[in-house]
Image 1 (cartoon, rainbow, N blue to C red):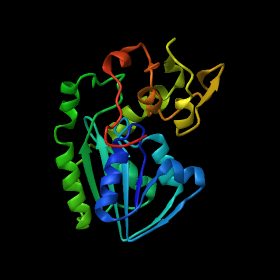
Image 2: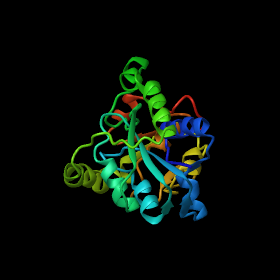
Image 3: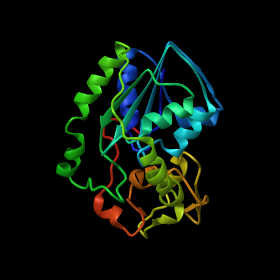
Image 4: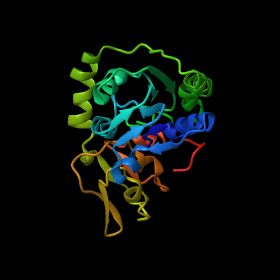
Length: 245
């Protein structure tokens, strides 16, 4: 069983590759939460998560903390742009047990308020080893290898990155809409936490905080949604080209 959260398609792609190789099902964490599914039992459970601010996205932390997992082999595959930070330690705390293995795959970092992926050349800086690393993970998981990639000490994430994520970065007041919005409503339909509603044919954020997955920004057909001071517009828009969102 493969469980994944994906806003721009990276983790969906990794989960799909693992699912195809193992002949196992890949389940969206968002769908599981909406269906109230909390118990998972299989001979193998693979958790596929992006790295947000050196740790888990808030939605993954809630899901893992509230779920029950029964399996002989549980591993984490973390996608990342610059570092996986302390995501392994946060995952182990959330599920209440040690992971049997921890793997990582470097992919495009879609937090464009900070990272520039506006050209193929800049994107390649993140993705040049992606396919090779996915193949390595597939082989390791198929063999049930018990390995743990190194990660930074948890206190660095706990005392610096995570407070920044939870207290500042997740504020929906940082998101805004340009005049070229067509009112298609895709952002509201796809938001994993229903933080967006359409009012007068324009998106309005109805929650003070969201996951800040930026799925709304990257999926917008007109690139009308922006974050902060507008640097996200200069840094480009991205969804994984191998999956449908």
